[in-house]
Image 1: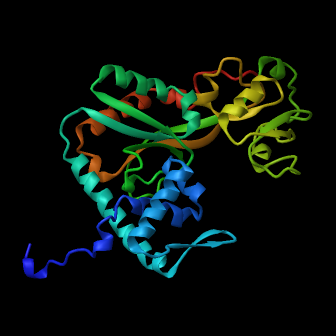
Image 2: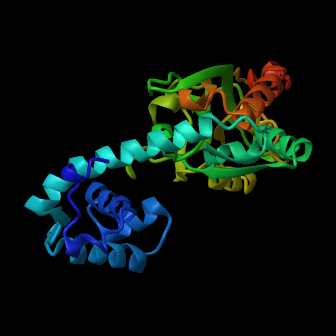
Length: 313
């Protein structure tokens, strides 16, 4: 470095911790200390302490308290785009380093929606771990679309119609869904479009008695009962016999105690995708897992298409 152009940091910034910028960005994006703690999977005290340390280093406030939460001061607004550029550069450096890794060992961080825990995909991941003990697979279950460009995960297994992110993707299989309930509940079903039956709802308004997905089903006259915005409680309520639930076939067909009731067919649903940032395609352990999952899942297309169970009539 040319000594004539070198300018040391002001002494007050000698305690500046670049890692604190991720806490600053999380608070700026969520508007609260609590929201930032949830996003970063840490606690309220840690976020508050790191923000205080950053403000001490800059000798200025970065946030003002507002009715809606924390609002950026003028300095905070000026710092925000710079912090985002630093975040992008650090993520790029991490991808570059990971992309040069030619040894099939180390950790792989996989993100997937929680309901896939009920599917055979978790069995595939478990088998991969047994076959490759030198590779540690870390599973993160979330309904949030992770930022692969920010290394929030190495691989994302996504259940979606389309993928528009700037990522490298492999569409694996087309999936179908069907209605499930207990055998006892199924025994009372008649060929009357669902009159007198109940569906377990998702997040429909409290006053709603039906929904568009019910009207498009083979039981359009069934009504809503209960609301559960996750598959696990949906399944639990269905197993208690309170009503029917709509599930992907590759999930519903595996749950003991649930059956597909009569007078219905399967419905086209979403697709299963394997996604990663393009910079990681040449990483040995990543490529190994991608190829393994693609081969295993694609070999079971009938399972995901709901063709392994014959519907009652």
